[in-house]
Image 1 (cartoon, rainbow, N blue to C red):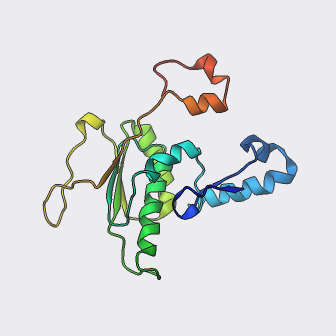
Image 2 (cartoon, rainbow, N blue to C red):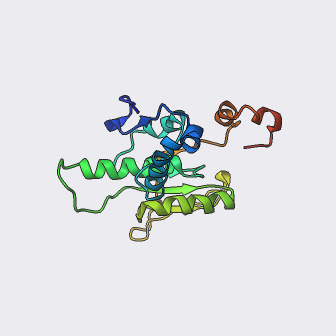
Length: 183
């Protein structure tokens, strides 16, 4: 494991073993099972390092309201939630019993991907998130129930669907089937 010291609080590690070996090599299968259990319980999120950079550059703090416009499948959303919760628990330098003020609105235009996002976020057992399903150009205004004021977001993350560049790098056969309408 290689700790990525440039990441806030040094919370990112890169496993130097290709993922497919974890499933195939008998001596590594127990590690694969442990990683899957940690992922399923919300203790760990697996993701490409390059995909982790947009949230890391947003300087998200515990009191921020964050809109994740193209949120599915949810890895970056999970990362944003972790940033809010980690900053909240470290704000006083001791255990914090207050509820975090920050929250995330995670949106995805595709209803199937929004459903997947909901499933992923359930691992976190928090009420600091809402999942929505709207096209970005038609995204509705949100209003605070208590004050009736329009919610203005402190940060907006919009990592739009891409050319699947990372998938092509990992799966060279994708070149054969890739098309311009694929996301």
